[in-house]
Each structure stands twice: as structure tokens, then as C-alpha cells.
Image (cartoon, rainbow, N blue to C red; front, top):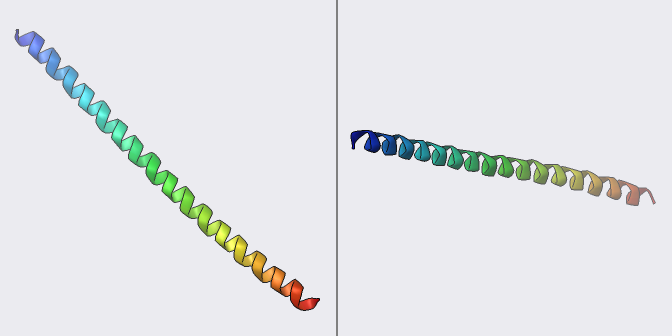
Length: 62
């Protein structure tokens, strides 16, 4: 009986460990997605600002 209880305990701990790793991986993916979205937003903002000023310069020369 003690052997069965020990095996169940080990299997339960292994399952908990997998769940924790899965949760950590999910958090990592969400964080990475947020960083990528932020970088893209800043990049597109800079592109928009650059294009707006360039268009304004061209329109001023016309």
C-alpha cells in the first residue's frame, strides 16, 4: 500500500510540475507578444511621423 501511495504522490508532483512549466511558458508567450506589439506600435508611429513630415515638406515646396 505504501508503494502505491508513493507512486501516486510522485506522479501527482510530476503533473503539478508540468502545469507550472506550462503556466510559465504561457506567461512568457504573452509577455513576448506584448513586447512585439509595443515595438511594432512604436515603429509604425515613427514611420507615420516621418512620412507626415516628408509629405509636409513636399507639399510646402509645391
